[in-house]
Amino acid sequence: MAEVTARTVGESRATVARLTVPSDANVMGSVFGGVILDEVDRTAYITATRHCRRNCVTASFDRVDFLGPVHLGELLTFQSELTYVGRSSMEIWVRVHAEDLLSGDTRPVGNAFVTMVAVDKSGRPIPVPPLTLKTPQERERFAAGQTRMEDRRKARQTVSRRTTRSR
Image (tube, rainbow, N blue to C red; front, side, top):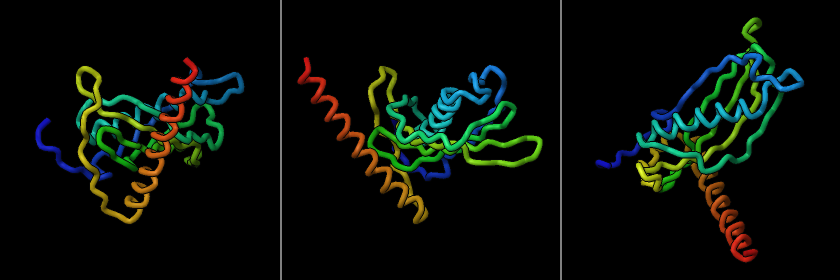
């Protein structure tokens, strides 16, 4: 990779819209959570790839919250932005809103934190550009993201130790 140039939060931000259709419905007539998670993952991928201009893979989903049901025929909008960037990993915050296309009413229906890792052609993690933080809000989100990343790392180590001991 050539010289790594820092990028801003705004340079990688993404918005994706998706109309919900009958094949998205569960037995209650609402949209399956998995359908929403699938689009959250895709939207996070767009943001991560825009930031590093490399292939990325999903490393984890954190704190997925469904705030209310999504009804068939509603338009889902997924908005994603970087909150934290490490050496090869990036945390992306994805917010989900539903819009009733007939009334124009919108409401938040979910959000998640997704960790993506930039990888080379053989699937090994590679460095990503640093994140330039321009606003106090971006700096706060970065600090919170760094804390979440450290918590994830500790949790993985704990699980790894338990798995190793049980063999």
